[in-house]
Amino acid sequence: MTEPLLEVVGLKKHYEIRKGILGRVSAKVYAVDGVSFHVDPGETLGLVGESGCGKSTVGKSILKLVEPTAGTIRLGGTAIEKLSRSAMRPHRRNMQVVFQDPYSSLSPRLTAGDIVAEPLTNFSLATGKAARERTAWLFEKVGLRADQMARYPHEFSGGQRQRLGIARALAVQPKLIVADEPVSALDVSVQAQVVNLLMDLQAEFGLSYLFVAHDLAVVEHISHRVAVMYLGKIVEIADRRTIFTRPLHPYTQALLSAAPTPNPRARKTRIVLSGDVPSPINPPSGCRFHTRCPVAEARCRTHEPPILEIAPGHQVACHLHTPAAG
Amino acid sequence: MTLTLVAPATSAQVAGKRRSWWRRHLSIVIGGLLLALMVAIALAAPFLGTVDPASLSPIRRLRMPSEQYWFGTDALGRDVYSRVVYGARASLFVGFAVAFVAVLAGLLFGLLAGFNRWIDAVLMRVMDGLMSIPSVLLAIALMALTRASLENVIAAIAIAEIPRVTRLVRSIVLGLREQPFVEAAIAVGTSTPLILWRHILPNTFAPLIVQATYIAASAIITEAILSFIGAGLPPSIPTWGNIIAEGRAIFQVRPHLILIPAGFLSVTVLAINLLGDGMRDALDPRLARQL
Image (cartoon, rainbow over all chains, first blue to last red; front, side):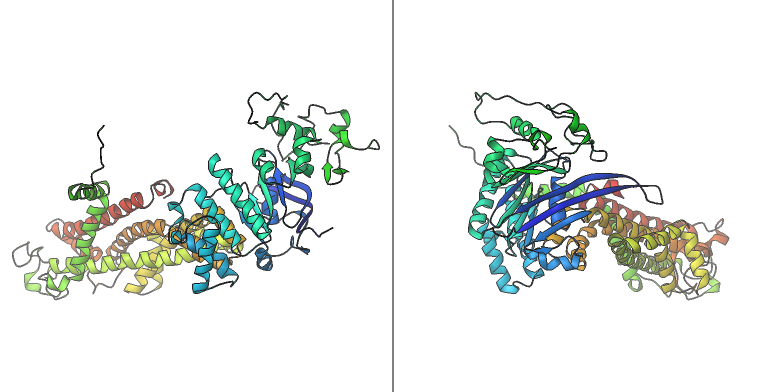
């Protein structure tokens, strides 16, 4: 078995809500509450869930853009969760990010060429003419023209801007790219182009992706494995085929039944969940999904189901799929 | 079927476009022209038919405006026209110098406060303290500690203006550091000083230019107040403030001794404020709400 490129164990991120001049902690937001997964080299792990379930916070914690509260994050075998910002810097060569919003993730007052070249100069990978040549090469790799390097971000379309973001991430030849909803701000026609670009780059450079998204069709297209999050926890992880054909967790089933299908005549039963996602400030006791679960039992309200491997590579956190001993 | 071609823009259309820019930014045009006039007067003071503004001539005191003395003479027989023209130098220099010093210092403090929580906590309390004192009062107090000179007047007024700039810059920095492009810079390994330099600093320029004009206008007024109450520049340098102060005693018989320098003062401050308002609207309409 190969060593995973990224291994996350028990990751937690709690935000403290402070009140008054003394800064007393009045409440905590359990944005991410004990998440474990791994990403293998060359693999895409899709991370899906509703808005506010903590999937973006997982991505930002791994990138150390927010400080995780607890848990370990190993990148290529090195624990990075406790590293300071400056100690983290060398590790950023292995791990890059593509953001959701292609408008605000590019500095408005730098040229496109400078934006893509910034990581090159940061890591002294290339300077002067070599940096310009490398930037031009990156532009062409992501489907932009080298003569667009002198333009400013506002002169590009949304899809082109996202390509710039991808070129910037690619500049340091990372092993892992955390893609935080990279296509959800784009038009559907452009989404496909960007997703295909990401897949082409993966094939060419052997990249791994942690692909955070809420669009199941996109995730199904790009992912090798899929993790489903609900309210700060992973409820199910499996390979793509298993998740999309034989989901076990009731939340995954409901999520999949809500996704539109291309065939309007296709018959399917929709599982409609009632109510809203509970607040992560005061998550439900027991299984976090029990308030909306169509098949919840008494024990779901009191006992939290552990996430267990019920088949090779298929983990589920649900009492219904726990061996009888529970 | 007829094919309609888009006619290339004629020179008349281009001119029309340019004219509409003038019209849209009328306050920049008016303010800029008035200010340019004042600056030209200040720079060209020796060539505008002036005499030595400090030369006394007791025989010719308190003359009414005439062909020889355009604005008349004051109680010591000095030519008021020359004094007002030379006074523009002091007022404008103090205004621009204060704006420059206050913006530079405020920018430095604001960047530090915006990026370091401990500096922020200490610095902003000091700034709160400074802001709780009316700026004129603070400048008077500072002038009381030193002797009257150009540098001290500039320093005293600038210190009173720094907190406002610091707050503005700090609020901009706090807003910008949450922007994804700053997070992206962290993610690609850019060091914190470089993030401030490349990604934060360029975005503070537009609001700072606008703020600088307001500071310049208020500094000119504060300087005039200081000179009027005798806490400003030494009496040997003519300024609009001390011309007004000297004219105060005989205001009832020679009102123009006050009205003329006061008119120049008002026009200058109005010009700078018009320019600032116009630039605020032109640079970024959203700023209108922030300032």
